[in-house]
Length: 115
Image (tube, rainbow, N blue to C red; front, side, top):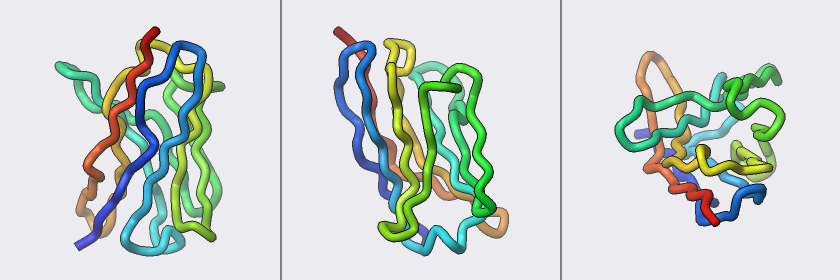
């Protein structure tokens, strides 16, 4: 059973920064794509960033230029650096991978941006 553990959420003021980490129970070198999603209550889950094993990355338009996804092979983590946070970034953030047609999700970490 693959497990994903997220950490790093919290309360931050507008304009602040947070760094989320996702630790899979298998080597990230064996995972082709790792995504970060977020979900606001009452809305569908939205993919905000992805990182592929080949080095390519992608971002939702709403976070482009503010969020950066990266892999740390030494720590076996996939991190999401979030800068210049806005109140509309408030959501539960989830790490996601797809292996052999099976979706795996972390438990989620709450990010709240408020003054």
